[in-house]
Length: 331
Ligand code: CA
Image (cartoon, rainbow, N blue to C red; front, side, top):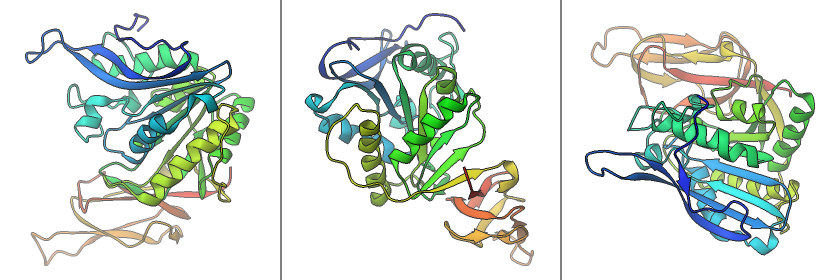
């Protein structure tokens, strides 16, 4: 757990200007005895100032952030930077290249792997590199998610609450600068997740969910792109024009009671759409049995009041799949 990373790079994090390169994770396999997994990274530095670390591809099948960060790498002019921007657009590269949530190499879910361990396989090694090498250089961390293959979200920026009230206040200010129609404050910070690990390192952290279903949504992509420039400006790192932020509505997800899970395997017919407000006891949907059409569909119900911010994307469900979750008003 305290081992040193084997990941190496030709990147000089102190160098002025723009560098676009890779960090290399040694990975010896039959096809390539002395091979490396080359994980893309960019460092843009000018003068001195704070460091923003922007990341996507934590889950490989969530695309808006991956595309937004590739565009930002090409667009950003070091002359307009004061400080440093570190960008990893495909942090779990094996998962990103497989269009999968988890790594095809070891099944690792990067967002359950922090703080990582260089002795426990490639996904843990990536988490460990981010936590032990990149996080200590950064002041702000932005981790861009979407619903992935299995979920669809209404777009929102988010932050996780930690034990430090002042850090929470600064993260909320960054989230407000990011500026999405909804801003979600997660009321927990599991240290296995990237925001929880970032909080332990004392970083201002924001994240968000933009779309899903394994697609790229143009409106949500624009949301991410505009928000990133606003956050860099908020941090004093970037000095350029930004699109005005929309008014935001602060929401939170109080707990698992605001989730609904499939009661049976089958085909799920939702009874709501994303953005609907529901009451406790309302029908969330029905599971149908197309191989046994005389059998009555099994309903499932919302247990709490709230706004439907997330729904399952594929129709086929197994018992226990999350089919929807809610958020409620308030910071
Ligand atoms: Ca995700």
